[in-house]
Image (cartoon, rainbow, N blue to C red):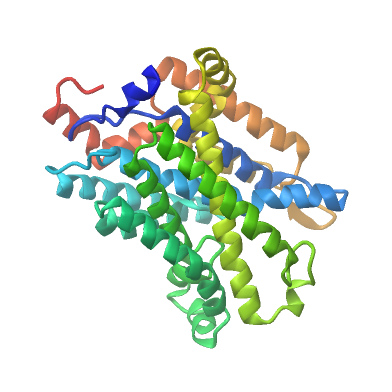
Length: 374
């Protein structure tokens, strides 16, 4: 184990700030960039480019959920889950979750960006993760994989049933969208978070753990995604309209599992570059990835600011509201990197992350319990 990895392996006791893992932050930063591409990249001029852009539709959000689960593991003790203060930590996470829900709804109702907003579903997923936060990692991993294998398809089937369609048009429509029928159903996010939680509990500072995760993720993606592409509704198959409902549901579940496999490989690759490679490679990779890592260290701030920019960029083109633009995409990516890098270098924690931490009471709890907080 490298000296950097050994440093990260020392988990903070309860009441102290969790050590950041640059590889996970870098993967989260890549997920944010993928979301930018999905949100504002203009329509592709060729089928090949369209296929590349399709990658940004699903994988970034699942990678984001995967790293969110890892983040929950880090703040709850990492490989050595906290024993004391669990109720307080759950309360802090619950407050953060409620704030995220309110923030997401507020942005949707005031800015009206032409994209699906993840903040409210993200908050709900955090609430659902509370009772699962300290389950043994093997159980968390098994439960996450089992649910991920079935829930995406079941959610697709359920969203087409008459009761769900009726509920969507009633006062419970928002909640139904959060849980099962929306673009980001929480029944899919929670299993992915469980997988991320389990991987972090197994120890992401261990080359063996990361190597096994990378091998499994590669195998899963290499086996399932080509199968998905050949199924009805896939890139190489018939159109989605020609697939029966159960085949389409199976395809959705297999694709989700394969895409999470890709996410695991991305995290493992970032950890390899930033923690396990030779010192020279680590230094170069750390420098090159530092703007992306900075983005991933303040995802709430970067994501929220990008929604503000997108909302301000809406225009009418050929009688249709749009925000798609290559210039806007480049501006979001470069601007976010520059903002995050400068803020992290000179001010540390992201602005909204700092406010969220204060509002949830975590800063005050840390200061009261551990005067030597890092």
